Length: 444
Ligand code: AMP
Ligand code: GLY
Image (cartoon, rainbow, N blue to C red; front, side, top):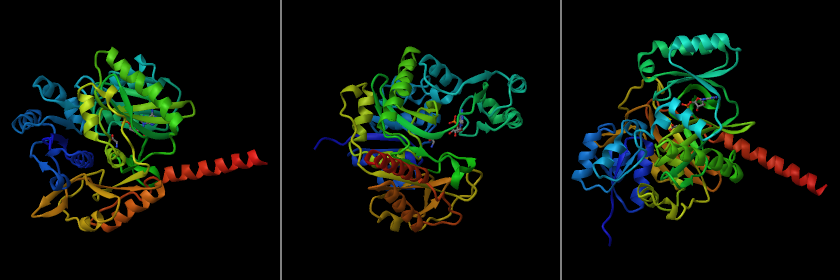
């Protein structure tokens, strides 16, 4: 028997639980820093924070870790990959400079411009006063106001008119954390259409495009309510067929990876494109420098081949010779169960019941997003608590199974969106109707 590989997964969310789960299936021995109650059940939690780069490096050295995988963006933007690489440690993820594709909206726009990649038109302003002047002077049209820099989803304001846009500029100027993150303010054309996510793994040269997904960023059903980290995701999405996926790869992913290499900030890791499918074709809303959460959960449940092999090939710049990943011919739906109050402040510590019953359901994985063990009991420990994920032979079946598992689980104040994947199901129906109509025309 070959010695099993030791992999360190950095982070504590549902994404990291899913990565640890998949790597365990690939035969790896997995450490998670800091992890949660879910990762503790399948791997070894190490009590080091995801942003404590020196502490993580010490764990990697002391425990002879041979691959580190970084989940959250903060550690990437802080330069964890540069420090690990300088210390001779193998690590999956982009360098500090390449992670600016997520960390700086202004850098992202420069790369998109260089690569001639379709995106919303924008103007960048060094001060709130300049942004205000611009908004006052131009036509009153819908815009999106964005603070440059990482703002955990709080720095983006979609505005229907000038008054709302001016108020958004004021909100950025008035919020000390946002103003600090915002080296500048971007005012962007508002794009209309359907939003989808397409992720790719790249070693900086070769690109492996993963199946398309749809996230649900708004807190409540029907895409109402405040923006969140994501309330659920499903894959594949019928909004992106093979031809459109090929177009997205050719017009968006490939030119971005090449533009980053030409800019001497080559990207290695997961490049996540948030896209708007507009009447003029797909356009980039944003890039992330990592797996999405909860997008990672349905993707990894569908991945039939080894994740470890893909990560290794990326770190070793050998993706070109790595066999392409195989995907289960099934749909996957992930429903986030959240604490009362999310995305605002939440109270913690409520015991969670029904996890064992949910775990016995076929084709279900309950990934923990914010949980902790207290005296052997799993308790809620944050806003997004669980990502309940199921596979099904159709999207409808996967949805049904995910919500069957959700029903088995409860804690005081728990809630979730009830309509995760519904846009996809409606789209499937529309496609069936138009196919039937086309057939009828052809035979009549
Ligand atoms: P971002 O953090 O840039 O992804 O923005 C968060 C969310 O704001 C996106 O998921 C979109 O729903 C929305 N958004 C961002 N930019 C635009 C845009 N130019 N037009 C319309 N919606 C946008
Ligand atoms: N679910 C959105 C993200 O991970 O950025």
